[in-house]
Structure formats: C-alpha cells, structure tokens
Length: 320
Ligand code: Q46
Ligand code: ZN
Ligand code: ZN
Image (cartoon, rainbow, N blue to C red; front, side):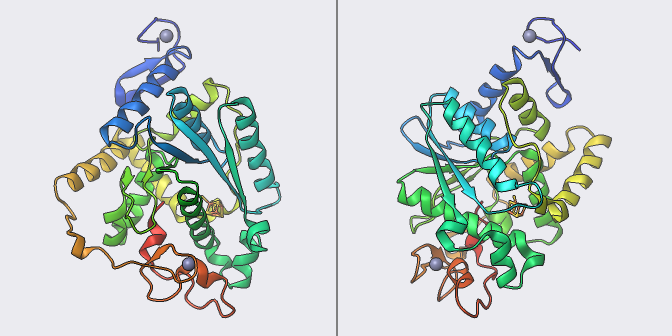
C-alpha cells in the first residue's frame, strides 16, 4: 500500500475510507477530519473554553493534542482514581498526562485527586458500599460528578472526551440489546448543557476507529499509558467490542454503519422527544448538580452512612 498523497509506503490503510497515508500525511488528515466533526455537530468554536477529560491513554491525549494543534483553548482534566491494580495504574497514567502537559507549555492540566478529596480510592468506595462487582459503575458515577463539577466551577463551556467509534458502537450495542431508550436518547456526539448544571459534552473522535486514534498517537510520538485500567477486563463493553469486531471483520465498515445510521436516524426523528418527555431534574440539595432523584443525587448518596440505592437509574449517570 502506498500513500495517496506522495506514493511512499503507507503507514495506515483505511479500507472504510479507501485511503492509505504515510506517516507524514496521516496526522494532517486526522486533524482535518476532527475539525470536520467539530464543525458538523457545532461542538464548539475558538471562543469556547474546553475542558478535555484526559486519562493518560491514547484517545484522550491524542484529542488534547489535536485540539491544541487546531488552536482551541483546551485545558486537560485528569482524575486520580487511586487505582493500583498491581501496576500502579493511577500513578502511572497521571505521569503520562503530566508529561504531556509539561511538553505543551500552552496547556494547563487540572488534577482531581479522589482519595485526597473524598478520603477513599475508587476500590475502597466500592468495597465500603458493597459494590466490588459494580466497581466500574461507582467509578463512572464519581468521574461524571467530578467532570461536571470542574467544568462548571472552572467556567468551561464544554467538556470533551476521547471516545472513539469503537467505544460508541459498543455502548450503542449494549443500549440496543436492552432497549435502554433513556440512554439511547442521550447518546450522540453532543450532549447539550441542560441549563440546570449539566455541562455540554462532546466527542470529537466519535467517527474514528480505535486503530486510527492509536495510529495518530504513535505517529505523533505521544507517550501514553498503554495498559488499560485493570478493572476494564471484565467490562461488558469489551465483549460487545469483540462481537462488533467480528462483524467488522466479516463486513468492513459495519461498525461505522451501525453508529452513523443511528445518529442519522435520531436526526430524522427516531426517538424524537419533546421537553415534556425528558426526565424531571432538580438540583441535589447537597452538591447542586441536577438529579432525577427527589432527594440527594446518586453521588451524594454514596457518602451517606447507609449508602442505600447509591446506584439508581438516575439518568444524569449516563451523561459521559
Ligand atoms: S477507569 Fe473506572 Fe474505567 Fe477502570 S474502574 Fe472501570 S470505569 S475500567 S473507563
Ligand atoms: Zn505521504
Ligand atoms: Zn449531590
């Protein structure tokens, strides 16, 4: 395979785009495609202050890199979950995020240290609330609360995450398998701010395959955390990813088709909903973040002595 632009050996062959590019021409294409997605869904403009959720992994650091290259005002936000998992996961991934920030003096990295803020790491909270088997739900709840908190407190107009097409297709697959209409309603490249305290959320990489973001990170020499979070191994989303990979193997483009047709169908009125159909939300009396619960939100209930019902079906939980 040869690069379509210069004819030298290609670094990546993208069958779904019928395009091969070399290491010199691929990054420019990748950056241009990201900008197209940002414009297509009107995610943000150069006047917006963007908070990029960075985990130290390839997708989020690549996203931060691209947004800086495009001249956006993008600050990074790292959440230290206090996860060791036998590989010092949080400490190592934090180092990657910090090293990236050091290499980009125009960028600012905000760190939320969960054990320092709340007195417990994620595994400790899961243990105390007897939710070791649902540790990722506890983690997701805390991460969403923190992202929302920091975005609103720091006056950021938008929160950007590095979710790629593989992530989005796997979530969509899971939501369709269980016909989770509430979640399907809220899935998409943009989740608007609700005016009651939920930050606007965007996913500029939602049309890139995981191998495309990985190729960008590698070619650009971004030093990222290669290992996944040790708790990701049992996640249902991984088995959904495997199923989708099998489908993609048999029918290249299947994953992209599945996701983009869903977005199109939503644009054309599938799951159309009026404001009246949206769940009623009110500010949590303790933290002020919106919740569908009529008392404390799921996050605040985590810290209650009896921590009952902490992981309800509060729809604010699906927002990232
Ligand atoms: S960080 Fe947290 Fe993930 Fe680790 S504990 Fe689970 S949810 S897997 S994206
Ligand atoms: Zn080339
Ligand atoms: Zn609360």
